[in-house]
Image 1 (cartoon, rainbow, N blue to C red):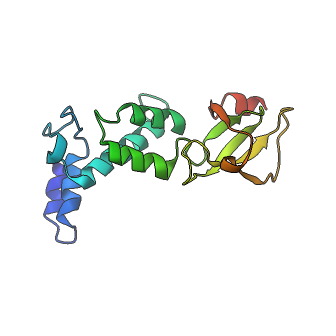
Image 2: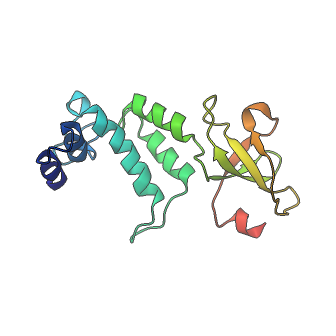
Length: 168
């Protein structure tokens, strides 16, 4: 409410910015705050900000919990699709960010460990990666980028920054 008041009183800001600040904690099903708005009562900007805000909160270190890996944050957002978040916004967010966001660590079907370097417009599940640990557990330097849309390998799962990666 305080942010809304500040922004709406400043002529430099578009009124949509003020409503985005006011409503970005509102949820599709009315379970959000401060006004418990739902459906079409929430502005489009706030719908978009809501998903971005949750993703940022989940992937940031907090005093009361560790940050989540990007893949885990995406799973939470996707699980709220249609109840907490608007399907068209979640769909656009996943397409832009990818199911495996840039800098996520993944295990490939070959046993190699890789880092995601770019998302793919073709498939949210098949980003562009760079192998960092080979199947023998050796660190790989200067590997080429691999577009998984055009490779026989695929992501078998995400890995945390501290687990398998540090063992390699």
